[in-house]
Amino acid sequence: MYDYPVLQALGEQAPAGMIAWDRAPFWTVSTPAMQSFASRFNSAYGSYPNEFAIIGYTAVQGWEYAVRQAKSFATDQVVAALAGATVPTIRGDITVRACDHQAEVPEDTGTIAATPSAQYGVPLWTNVFTAQPAQILSPCPSRGCPAPVTASSRRERQMTLDSGIITLLSAMTEASSLFIAAAGLTLVFGAMRIINIAHGSFYMYGAFFVTVIVGAAGAGSRFCRTRRWCTAAG
Image (cartoon, rainbow, N blue to C red):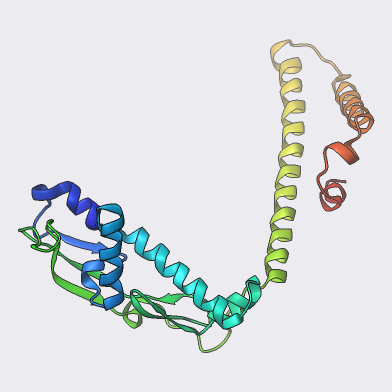
């Protein structure tokens, strides 16, 4: 990737003729809004914007558009307003697909110039090629499009994630217990050459004392953050 800051840092050492790409090169977007943004950015910061400044500004424009259309800051209403909308931005009109909320944004490539740009003072690109969204994005399926993301679906995913974490922790606890028991038996029978048939009893006593101590310490109020976690943990 060769965006403006990289090319500026390389200067004359920039590899002329090298194929370059950038997510949002301001010099390849000829819209008046982009040129105005780049000029104002340069006046404010003494340098031209990199791709992240442009992408971030575009994202804010999309959010502002959705808020105005929805007349609300509520997440679900903003998301619904963006689905299928064509948003005017400094990069031009960007359509947000309704099927998966993917923004249809073109990608630019080119070759690094051998001489610095007279306007920007660094070697930019020549032979610029802009790949349109239809050329690089997978089309939306005709059937079975994913449902819009809502607050309830996010809560369901979070609950599923919580359950998965609890299951993983429980499995690790059981595996650790089996490992401790196996290690003890290995030491007793393998290293010490002593038959200790009370090994299982000591393991049971340890588990019993841990249960008593945790219960006396108030596990229900101190170690559980929510009722769901306590219930799932037993």
